Length: 138
Image 1: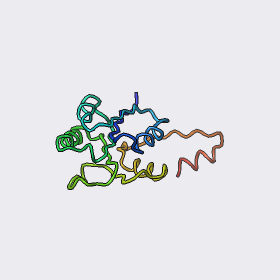
Image 2: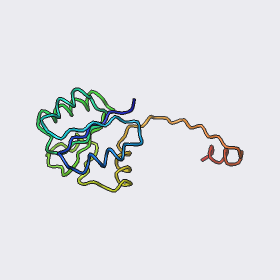
Image 3: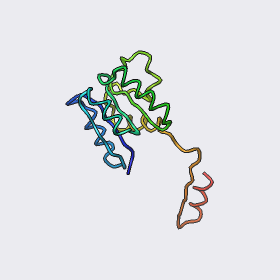
Image 4: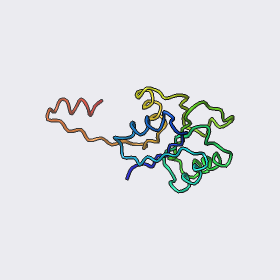
């Protein structure tokens, strides 16, 4: 099972289709909701690994839920979709996307915020020894 992704955006917004399309080839379970009143219950039930949320969904109580989740799960990531009108919440979100970017720009900003392991091991196999040695040395 992949990462649990929650998208909270008003009906007919551009983000749900963009993110579903973008995440279609990765192991992710994508859930979305269109009503701000649904957000806290879905958030509590799903306990997403990644949250994309529009400002209209950010009540004080819901902001507190996000804050608690960030403190209890260091791998949890939250992204604000739309203009940042939530004063003083800049540190709560890993990135703010004011509008739907191009796919390349989105990937660059999104990947920069993901937690990575301290060490990455890589096995390189090639039938030409020179290339294998060059890759190893690089």
